[in-house]
Image (cartoon, rainbow, N blue to C red; front, side, top):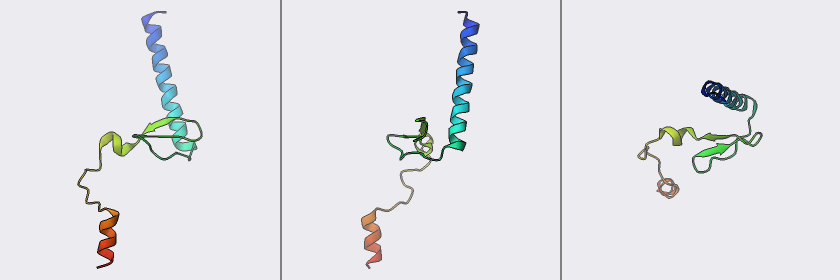
Length: 76
């Protein structure tokens, strides 16, 4: 098989993967709970990265308080 044929097959495979991911995103509404930075579709089994893990969009100091602190402030 020539190098050009291999590249064409890789591009086709990449497009099919993207198309499948897009189909899953719009047609399947049964994602499982995220575990270890990814979640899985219960319908087709595709795995997706959790967006907030991928880009680290929530800083560690986001101002979130623990459950104990929330209860303490209610009972004051």
